[in-house]
Image (cartoon, rainbow, N blue to C red; front, top):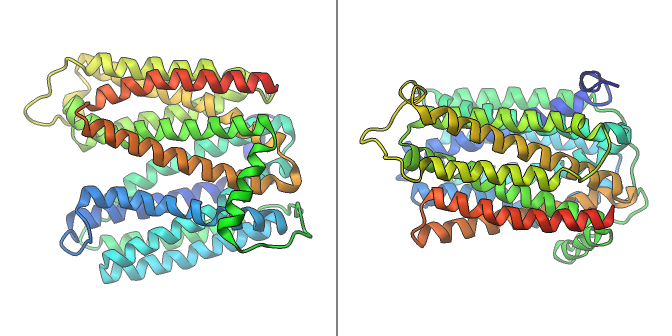
Length: 425
């Protein structure tokens, strides 16, 4: 089946839309929250805005540590479309809860809702990836994961822009609340169309000691070398990708001298790049699940990141921030845009086959728990990357230098991952 045929098929389209609408809602809420607290509720917030942004990210990630063990068990224990429907119904309830928090203008309540959205995402993540191999043939997994990645990043982009823009109006809280409820209802209706997927381990007894089960969960990843190094590769991707995306706004302001319009431009370029990379991956691999492009794509990512440093290391920053109209005519504008597009393109090519490897090589009986364990590893890497980045900036490195250093480290890390995956092929 062609890639377009797969996208519109009843086996895949409902899941694609369900995932995309969920990512859209997460980012509408998260960015609306950050803008609202930064500009309107700063006096009521428990922390300064800069620290609060970091705390918000932490609150969204924390449930992956706390509840991944239970999420993996539920996704293996019960029929998967049933789990998807229940998780998306919970999103509708959370959207209503968010509307109440916006109406009350309560920063603490909004942060609680963000934590609950992170919890909802924790329970959705293992089931959405575990269900793919039950609905798709192995030769369709690259395309399926590519479409999911493309849709997710597109939703992140639009959600980020919509959340920040809509909350700025006088009735911003109401507009965002209504939009979130509509999107959540749309996601639930799409979830109802996801085809039946038999439970992988229907006789498994649920175990609620989450600390013990979390450590047991990590053993699922370690049972298969191919799965283990694929998970490490995915975690590496999110750590590196998180660095470049989260530092994009400071890079734009302090290295380029640009305002928010240029940040949005760079985000759009990045999103399009990673989406095209994810979709092109299937053609490059000819639908064969393989890690052969892992190192080449990681090397391409690093080359582009190094050029970001070369382009801006001696560039003077204007006294007044440039807007997009003033930036694009400059000779460096298109070089920087091309670097970001290409960096994201190589990231898309790098990550998609690793997801497919985890799905294809995991034992079906424990596939969701294996993916849930991978989510814990991804969260660990993401937090570690954020801490290291913060420490480097605190030591006096500028953002361009951090980008360059990360590019060098990325080459070394990707080489290790590639060699280990090649040894397990």
